[in-house]
Image (cartoon, rainbow, N blue to C red):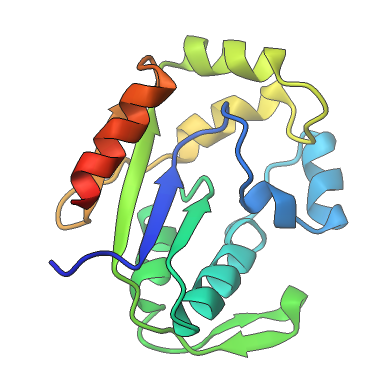
Length: 167
């Protein structure tokens, strides 16, 4: 496979990232604060928009989002059935570009991630939604281009594993 031009860091919540959470519209944040899990379109559409736009302009991208379903990752790679994805909330219709995606799946037990969520401050997603993320998760598998890293490792080990994979 050619060198990736985009990197997806995925998994259930629990880490502080500058990530897709920063782009949730206020309506989505309010739903989650009330304990309402987002539906597929609301959860995913803006991730596709930002990744597609930046890769089309020739940028290398790191996108951190949950991407819990294989369908979401497939859309990031190639678009859905090679047709434009209509993103009503963004008022845009974007044609998919070729994305050579490496999925970095950060894994961890419910207890470890739950503990991290309980220590996280000032975030709109309450820990009570974590179970819905685990329930939704479709673990990456072949033929997806992915690596799996346990969050029990320290940050330098996680970064080293990712960097070694990108060589």
